[in-house]
Length: 343
Image 1: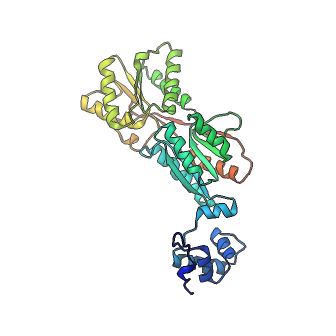
Image 2: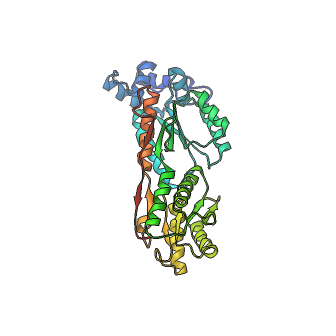
Image 3: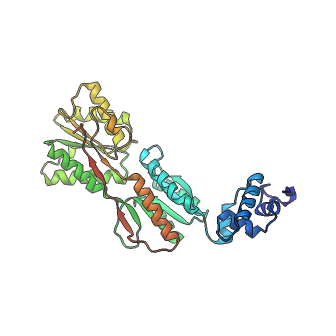
């Protein structure tokens, strides 16, 4: 197998081109393209020869050039709020497991719950002519909504479900989940139930709405029991919030934390403060993150189907990108109340 001359490489970048691989494999460039895309019509021996040449030369396909030539991109933009939260890591891993076998790669952006940063990222990533979009939730600024609509790129929303016409979504009702956890605490005989929320992103506020509605219906709502902090959610903050709540409202007998990391920190703080859980104060969380079943006592929480959401949303997007029918534009995967020892 002969090596291509340096002059056949891209003069601008010095990178190995598809023509270099074709020359080394002694086939046409179109055969190289088809072989590397995995088209079945290409003879298996030719595919092996092309792959060997590409590997020997260190050839890396140019996705922009491929998209321009074929009018089809192999990239999907995925926008998530954070990577420090295991919730979104689980979603992303499931998305990748679904997209990669179909020949798509993720172009990921982290918005940090900032609408302006989301707009900037989307403007930047749309320049890559992606085949599809996966975005978190529905709260964004008008400029971003306009970008999404005018791009013409198929889009699926993650983590929340909406029956609005023309909207594709996979998630569950955050409000219903918040209400169910509050009803559980009421059923345990708790009457002064505080809600502790951090980050204050749209899904946290939806859980707050479920808590608020349920206590209002029970005649027990007290706005002084809303303990909200815009700081990022963390175990350290959860411990601080528990101490602050009980100092300001000593009659509180339960705290519903918007995330498990807050609730885990509260359980550790309760141990340090000598507070019995759930006798003195019940503690509940949300998302059923790793370690919640190992806390002392084990943490009552809401299990959310993160991996299932990622897989289902990616599968829905694949159908849209392939212009195939979608059985239902709104997939509600629900949630599960996990009752453990902390309540």
